[in-house]
Length: 66
Image (cartoon, rainbow, N blue to C red; front, side, top):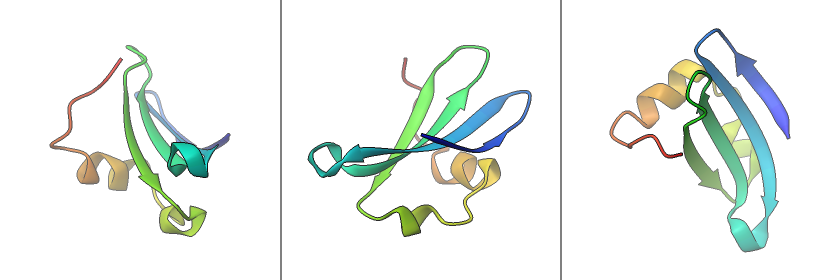
C-alpha cells in the first residue's frame, strides 16, 4: 500500500490487490468517517500523477461506501 496524498479531509492511497481482485486499487478515503471510493485498473501506470482533486472529480457521481 502506498499513500499518494493526504490532507485533513482525505487520504489517497494505491494498493495492489492482485489480478484476481482487479489489479490496482486507488482508494479515496474520507478520514473522519472511514468511508471510501475505489477505482480499479490493471496497470499501476493508469494512476500515475493522480491527486485527491482528480479522484474527487472522477468519483463525484459515486456514493461513499463503508
